[in-house]
Image (cartoon, rainbow, N blue to C red; front, side, top):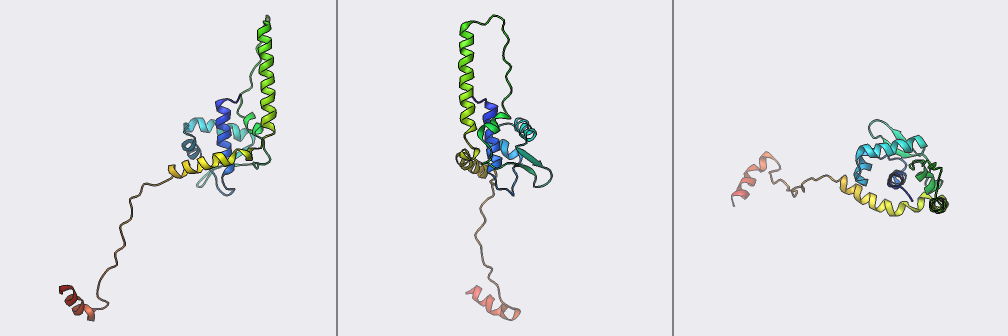
Length: 171
C-alpha cells in the first residue's frame, strides 16, 4: 500500500509535470495547493531532485520543473523515490502465522508494484490538474476592490469656449 509520503510525492510531481514547459512551480505554491507545510514539501522536493525527477531553478521566476515527460514515466517510477526501504525483520523463531502473513504481504506488494509499473503518470494528470488549477487560481487571486465606474470629464475645449461652457452649467 502506498504511504502518505509517496501519495503526496506523486501529487507534487504530477502538479509540477502538468505545468507548461516554460513555467516553473515554487515550493510555496505547492505547499498551498497541497495544504502541507513548506518544510515537508521541501523534503519531498529534495527526494525527487536527488532521484532525478525534477530540477530546480534559482532566482526570480525560479522554481521546479520536470526533467522527464509524463509518458516516459510510470507511477511506480515516481512512487519508488518516496517509499522508504523497509527492513525485513529477523526473528529466529517465526510462527507459521507470521510467515503466512508475510507471504500475503509480499504478494500484495508485488501485485501493487506490477500494476503501478504498467500505469503511466499521464493517466493521473487530468483529474489532479483540474483540482490543482482551481486551487491555484484561488490561492493566487488578489483581493482588489472593484474599480470605480469611468467618468468622462466635462470641460470646455478651449479658453474661448469657457463663457459658453459656464452659461451651459448655469442653465
